[in-house]
Amino acid sequence: MTEYFLRLLFLIPLVGGLAFGALWLWRKAQPGLAVGQRERLVKVVDAVPMGTTGRLAVVEFDGKRILLAVSRTGISRLDEAGQGPSHIDG
Image (cartoon, rainbow, N blue to C red; front, side, top):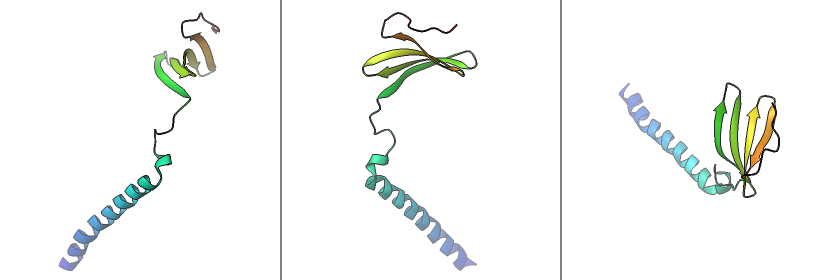
């Protein structure tokens, strides 16, 4: 019984260390797969909930900030970087 516990005390950290080392090596060998390293063309600057199903969102695309109304039925562009409203569903 003592031999079983000694093996257990040795093997559990060994397996954990091997798993950690394998994940570390995989992350170093595959830098293109790391989360958040890709430059995105569209960025969500801010989003504010409006009621239970709707939300207002500001996205940045091609150097412009666009105000969007997002609901279950669709997405509408409300404003673009200080210009007047272009489309309002109501």
